[in-house]
Length: 107
Image (tube, rainbow, N blue to C red; front, side, top):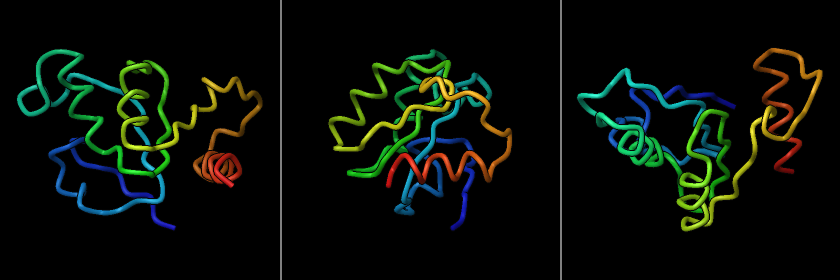
């Protein structure tokens, strides 16, 4: 399994041509405003570009959850809550643990 971090993240990213098993949107920031937009809403729209048809998506905290969930629903993409949203506690802070948790949730 490969975890691929997307460059600017979103619709216009060059890595957006892959068909992942899972997409993850961790946060929205103002670090690429000249490309993604200068408002939270515009950036959220661009970030939603990585949500693929029928592909699960994990949505982190501090996101416009309802907006991104609506786009996911339109694409038939199941939304998986982040551990914080699912109120999972005592989760080891490592990529391996997060990966296992996500896979257990999906399967």
